[in-house]
Amino acid sequence: MSQTNPFLSPNSSEPSGGSPMEGGRTVDAGRGWAWIAEGFELFKKQPGMWIGIVLVFFVIMVALSVIPILGTIASFLLMPVLAGGMMLGCRSLERDGTLDMGHLLAGFKTQTGNLVALGAIGIVGWIIVALPVIAIVGIGAFFGAARGDVAGMGAIGGSFLLGMLVALALSILVYMALWFAPALVALRGLAPVPAVKQSFTGCLRNIVPFLIYGLVVLVLSILATLPLALGWLVLGPVLVASIYVAYRDIYGDA
Image (cartoon, rainbow, N blue to C red; front, top):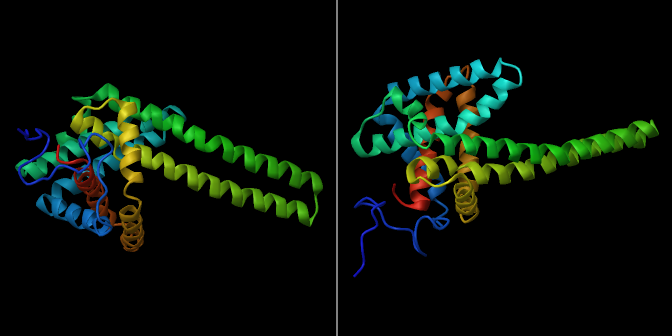
């Protein structure tokens, strides 16, 4: 006799190919747009509270950014905690129609250590991204300056271009590893390393919908920035909610 998965709601279907914990499922390409549309539906349920949460989040990040070095480290460590709290808020809003400012800090009440550990993994990931880029640009600049001619200047420019391309490629891998990790930790209780692996696999299996998602987000980001960036008061919450929607879509309900 089959048993109902306790992680799934009555309106959800379990991802094919096994447990939703096993890297998630591949969804249709059109879901890339649907994640944003459904995220907007979550935003519309409590727009005022969403805007308030985004503003407080922004203030926290700005306050940390003015603290040299330690503030940057703290922001990396706290980002998954705050993200995990917002994922809990999305689930609460979807299930019970409730969202409050306390959800932003809910990550400090559950899975705090694992969420902070995700931040530490993120720091390591960005260091790994930076090291080869610094090496490429540094070597190119050294040999280009040593030549001191037009070819040398071309070498410097080429090294910067190559460094940017390497940084972009490696950054995408880091984002894939961290994109769903806070949700997997906060909503399913996964340990940091399995959450990172599951996040990377889920993103890898859904490259096409993520490409569509990325293009739509790019256009919306430009539009949101035009009116004094006020559009981000809406787009910010919608993007947060879209991550939750995509997580639920790929890994099953939580």
